[in-house]
Length: 448
Image (cartoon, rainbow, N blue to C red):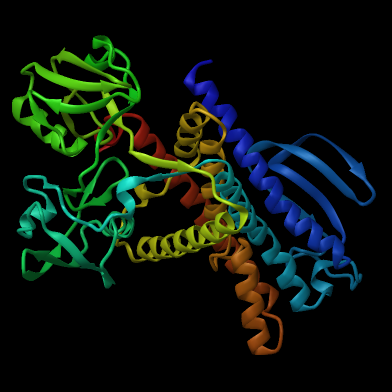
């Protein structure tokens, strides 16, 4: 099956399932509290098919980019009749419970899915748990400009003491072009440094230019590139290049840029065999459409620990991971509003489809579940942002009204909702445009 079709099917299934869960949260609590639900829709726009049961029309609509639950009297601009089954006839507490139910279902789904994954197939990169000892530094990188050297150990970054690589990497990624305080230990010396991570790749995430020691394990192979043509296979371990041991994939990349198109000899472990390959690097595109580099044509796969966790450990770890990424998402949202990070860090439907397609092609079903968990958490947190029209906006209005002791006027709500709708449409257009820029090489340059 073509990659495009796999990606399309995967993203439709994932987003459709998450929207169903989200809207079911609103639906179930509304019905429980006695609010009349007129429509339960997957998708927007014209009704394609469905059925009516009782007072609710269950439908699938033409535009598969969301979904909604339509409750009687939900729109502040609608005329209120005083019917007890209308949304606005219920107390603020009831309306709060209905509004928060959708995001809560997404967050609970994320916790449940990640717990399931950990119980079935807990896979964790070995180097992530290690203390952040720098194996190498790229030339002209943020770390190099701050005089950080191989062998330095990061003992504090952005206020986090004795961090592991798992703690270092996200702090750098969400801080492009922003000063980041770093303390390193070099022998018996403790040095205070400030780095300014450079934006890299089409998503413009921050990069310090340092890297840890980790084995070179062949992951996804690119078609018609030297590695696949020479017979290198996924899960091969590249232990040496031109007779010199390799400490990391970054060291290999750096060496290839120095030797350029000069042929290289690789020593590869495949099971119990040691194999030799002679390859000629080619100048090729990278994950950054503005950059080319000499490559052999494969992505690195992390060395991982694979095990199964009992239920107690699995749910505890799932809660910790979801909590950690929730705060990272909120910090990213804050930096987006402040203009400190590029909107290209946000993926839209095209980016999600690409990730879903790749996950769907991996062995087993746990990679797809893990991705679904992450997207569900994103959806839940995004909907809690205090933006009118979103659930968080409804909650924000309810909080203000509770403090005021009376409802906000319908005229003000109408203007705010109209402005919020325009904002969300523009935001959606921007996200999709950024997806296209990241997907189609050279598009941004042609539009300038």
